[in-house]
Image (cartoon, rainbow, N blue to C red):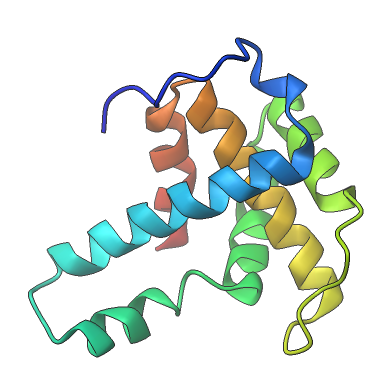
Length: 129
């Protein structure tokens, strides 16, 4: 995927955990959509249905639980900052614990993206299978 879009902040850790999660959500969804599309051209509603199996709080919480022991200390700290961030409220159809874990996962993805570490993102997301 190449380098990330440059930002004015040189240290991604200077962003709030929710800002990192905001970016990480988009990055993760793009990767999932790309993978789903690579499986074959289909109707858009079928592509969306397949993508949402992976891009939701429960699936992302499950993924982070599987990979948490593979995180470096620095990555774990970013994940925990995102997980513990005070979001306004979890969506009504989501479990609050899963929502916080998925927010931590998204913060980690956003942080890695801003560090131009797509290889690490792909390594961690590869654990999805």
